[in-house]
Length: 473
Picture 1 (tube, rainbow, N blue to C red):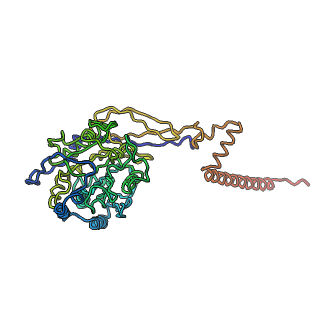
Picture 2 (cartoon, rainbow, N blue to C red; picture 1 turned 45 degrees about the vertical axis):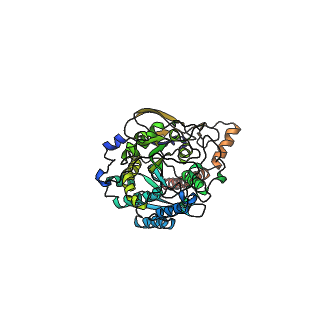
């Protein structure tokens, strides 16, 4: 039976293209009249390394201004209450859970939105993370707007239905609740969390115990869930940023990663769905390679891609890092379709029921060599041409029959030397002992039935012979 066992490996290749989604009616736009005269003007971000927000380094008057700006934003307690109330109101399509705690012990709450929350399905998973920097709180509010919109419009709006029923969407409104309460960029230890991840060029963050608890929580989260796509929400500019974020020599230039085309398409989806991001005069098409903008090290998006296979964008969604709360509804309108369309770009086809499942974002209109491998099985490969839509591939892998130490070897191919006998006995006494025991019981039962049938037949024959016996006098 072992030799006949194959494994079905399903690979869902996702082509994240704006044009194909438009053809399917996935992407929507908001009419310009919805925005009135509130359009943002693109400005260059002057972001200095290690700068604190005005509340921690400015004058008393500046501190009062910052405190006033916080009015209308949810406090950490209010945010937690809003998340839990959402979980109760939309329990049919959501799950609330925590991935850890901040330095000061504030839970890092996540909202999962799906038609089957908490279950493993052959569907891509996407995550949004807000408030990575404590003084960039717009993302906190936008993710609550997004969650409530999906809940209110599930089964009413086709785009909401598409996302809820085909994606596992995870929303972490605040990665840095301590920094938010302190009104500063870093966390309670004054560490920039977007510089705290292991880096491919510089190895200052390799000691996991030295990392911040918020960073470790994100890393564990990605070990638990295989995310296909991701985006973090920042403030201070208006642009969709993609890897690489750093360079080996710390110089500023375009540093494309191996999936540069796919990342450019993802960034373009967000930029073109936004009200005015793509019309930026600072960034061509409203997108930028991170290292071409300015290099940074220990960033989260590069770590996601390298260590977790997750395609992450860094989204600058507001020129003002901390706009007044009255502007939040306008910022939601500006970013709403971008946030929805980026998630919806993962939804092209539904993967079949499989033993193994894997999703991979690829740029369209190109030829790819796809290889499916699994320990104990022979690998298989095929060449494909990926068009505008997604493609689903199924591989049936044959087990290896001569791999030393593998329990998948052909147990019937038995040499009569002592080594083979010993390996055969070890196989039987290993993880297959229960199966072997059941086999012996069934065999014994069959022997019992055979012996009983034999006795009954003999008794019947004896009686029949006795009746025909003749008596000689």
